[in-house]
Amino acid sequence: MANRYKALLISFVFSMVLVINVIGQVNDASTITVKKTKDFSLTGLADAAAWKTTSFTKLQKKLTTGVNYSTQFKILYSDSGIYCLYICEDSLITSTLKEDFADLYNEDVVEAFFWPDEKSVLYFEYELSPWNYELPILVPNNNGKFLGWRPWHYEKERRTRHAASINKQAGKVIGWTAEFFIPYVLLSPLENVPPKAGTKWRANFYRIDYDKGGNYWSWKPTGLSFHEYKKFGTIVFE
Image (cartoon, rainbow, N blue to C red):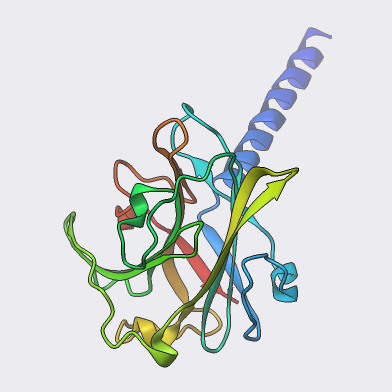
C-alpha cells in the first residue's frame, strides 16, 4: 500500500512539473505569427474589421513597483506594410510634446522595434504618443553604441499612417489606443523586406508610462535598455 501511495505521489508531482513547464512556455513564448490582411484605414479607435482576425499579445511590466496597467497589442501585415495596434490602460496621460520627431520616450508612449535582417545591426524604431505624434527612426547599433537617424524624403508613399485616441468613461481617463502602419518602402534598403509567407524578423514591442515615475512594459524582456536587440523575439509572417 505504501509503495502504491508513493507511486501516486511521484506521478502527481511529475504531472504538476509538466503543467508548470507548459504554462511557463506559454507565458514565455518568443514567437508571434503575423497574419496577412488587405490594407485598411486607421481611426485610433481599433474599429477596423481586420483587427478581429488576430489575437492580442500582452506586454509584461518590467518591474513590479509603480502602476501595473494592462497593455496589449496586435500586429498584421499586408502587401504594402506592417500594422500595429496598442490598447493601454491608463488613468493619467503624461504627454505634453506636440511635434513629430520629439523625444517622445520621455513621456507616455508606445514603441515597436523591427530588425528584419540579423546579418546587419540596423533596425527600425517607431514611437507614437497619446496625442498621435510620431518618432520613426532607423537605428545603427554597434555593440551598444546606437543613435537614431531620421528618414530622408519622408513623404508620399514613404510616410507612415497613424492614429491615436484617449479613452474616457464617465469623464475620466481609462486609457488610450494607438494604431500605426509602417510601409515597406520606408524600410528600404534593409534586407529581408518586404516579408513573404514564412519570413522571420526579430522584433520587440514596448510601452512607457510616467504615472508615479517611469513604468516600462515589453513583449520580450530586456535589461536597462530597449535597444538590446539580441533579446528581441521573433515574428513569423503567415
